Amino acid sequence: MLTAWASVIGTLIVPRPVSSWLTRWVDRSVNWAFRLVTGAIADYQRRDRVLASRASAAILLAQLIAWLAISFLGYMLLLWPFDTAAA
Image (tube, one colour):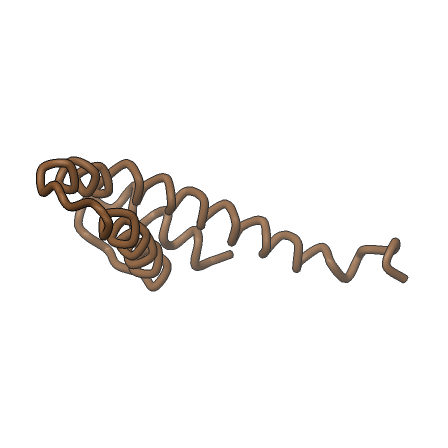
């Protein structure tokens, strides 16, 4: 959970580039997905248009999903000991 918050602060608030393992992982995952999708496109200009959308919107949306998933997992693990339905 702290990793997610550190990544959020480093990405959205700090004016200089701050890199965390979460940001690098999301960037590599989005990169891999776009390379997989564009591997079959033979036309250079069409491939370039698809890869251009990866730069900002796709990476930021993927980071948002990763932040939410890690925060949800962290809070779930915090509340797990208090779950009486499992007993």
